[in-house]
Length: 208
Image 1 (tube, rainbow, N blue to C red):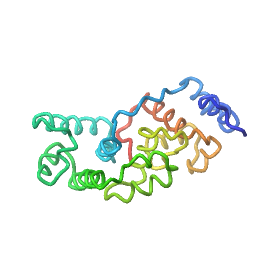
Image 2 (image 1 turned 180 degrees about the vertical axis):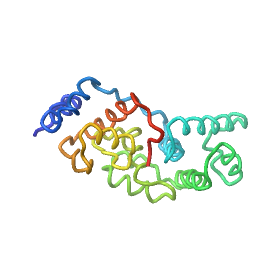
Image 3 (image 1 turned 60 degrees about the vertical axis):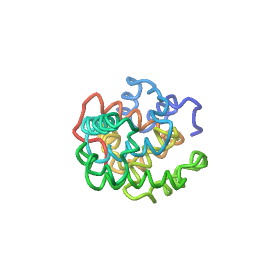
Image 4 (image 1 turned 30 degrees about the vertical axis):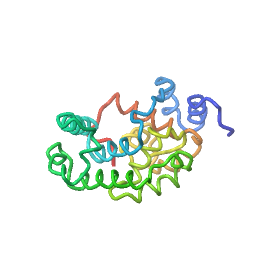
């Protein structure tokens, strides 16, 4: 099927031919807006997504708020805490030892010039491979950066508990990666819709 230039219309048309419950949920939900990136620099968003890994959205927000408060207390930016001298401060904010090392690795990668403007021009698989070369950054985190920072329209985050869970409840599918292929080139929009569906019935964890 030739994709519609309107992402929501394409999702609806594709879902109509696959599963009525999914189509109805998408129709009720309507188009999910794509908000501008929350951070000017990808390294800052990457650090936030590392904090988000494998914990609830609420817990992640609380930890990040403590990081921001600790930075403000010292009159620095959060990224300035991502050095060994502030490791205990970060652990006191709620970051695990592994996450402290990951945000330090992100800062080091940034200082080494890994996050140049060319990163935005790469296809997602190539960009994800570069991001995954940073210690503590996995595929889920790379997918979140692709969707929310670079606004890549066609990423299905197969490791995301919330998106996968919502789609499985609506369709009964087990292999969501295969199920979502017909939704290309707008699988990121499908993921956004599944997160919005999940938000209507909050669950304890979002990320894997």
